[in-house]
Amino acid sequence: MASIRSRLLLWIGLPFSLVGLLTLVTSYYVLSRQITETFDDMLLNAAERLERRIYSVDGELRINMHYFSISTLGSRGDGKIFYRIRDTEGNILAGFDGLQDPPGPLDEPLFFDTRYAGNALRAVATTFPVVRSTRSGQIEVIVAESTEARESLINEFLLTLSILITIGGLLAVTIAMLAIHRGLAPLRSISRSLRRRSQNDLEPITADVPREVSTLVASINGLMMRMRQSIHNTQQFNADVSHQLRTPVSEIRALAELTARQCADPGARHNLHEIGRIAESAGYTVQQLLTLAKARHELVDASAMTVVDLAEICRQACTEAISRIYQRGQELEFCERETGCRIMGDSVMLRWLVQNLIENASQHAGGGQPYRGTLYVAVAYSAQTVRLRVSDDGCGVSPQQLTRLTERFFRASPGTPGSGLGLAIVNEIARAHGASMELDSPPGQGLSVTVTFPPSSAPLAGSAK
Image: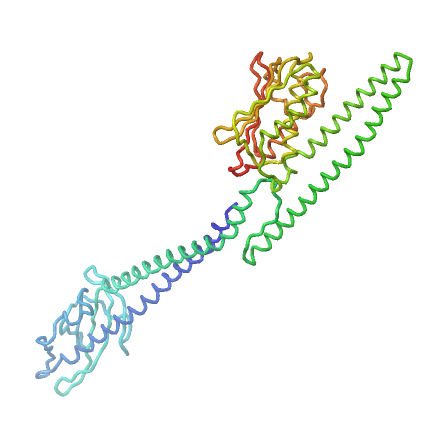
């Protein structure tokens, strides 16, 4: 679809071009008529001057050529002049006999177009009385001029007018472009403001805009308000669902454990333990689903993010996980390679990210078997980015499985505990922080997950594509 700028230029340039063309056509007809009338008056004046040059001697008509020559008939001196003078008997007194006769009676001066000797001519024919001795009669005079002078003058006028119209058109288009540029400045300002925002920033637009644009801004702000309300409702719904589900699941687990202690039947006790295990898994899945719902990148309010120390958050997450890691026969190593690993983010969500990366490595590094190795957590600052890397020395995953690890509920080793949501949560939190996530699993070297964040001095990039 054409832009507003091109549409405005089209609606300004097209009418102006039509007006300019109409002006040229109208000017041609007006100038042609006026120049023709002016030249015709000069022709008639030249013909009337002949009357003063004709006199009678002994009944014979003569012309005083001493004071009159053909050049005196010219209007501008750059055209060809032809004339003819004859009496009522048809005798040629002077001039060119081959000139065409007038096309009508000469009751008054008659102007007409003709040709002679290969020249297009404009001619005037008129009569005036003369006296020969005792007789009086009429003398017919025709004066014709070639049309080059008229056409040259018309072309000069039209050329000058065309140049003026072209210059005026260019100036008008330039002024129109400047006016359009200035007029669209508020829209460009709003566009830049929205483009610089994270897609999760739903704060109202506060730009000072003209009255015509204020309606658009009000509509955008209204849409943002409705989206914020929708996000709030969604988050509230997630919290309500989590609360309503976690309570009965916890009660089922507690009741199953209590009943198993009081039950003497081994088969029933086994079933009760299974119920407790399933209830525990269901409770963990509910908790992960709630975390995933809260971590959805499109629901995160980027305006609430602050500058946080990623290394400190990793240290806290490792401290919380260390006892659980040791109970599983594993070790946890944390390495802070650089100081000042500060990013724009939400500390709670970033803790979820690190916790899920550690838990994912702890649960699945051994494949179908319990993992007894070391988990590595490293934070580093390099090349204007902050990198978080969590890796293990386990069996890794196949290239086919590697591309699906961030899918919800996908598990590379279905036999191990878990919900299949850990890396999906990590991916959502990374996207909400404008970070990129890379998974690598060389054969026999375990799985490595690297999350690359922009530093706090760089603008937040929004969600990763």
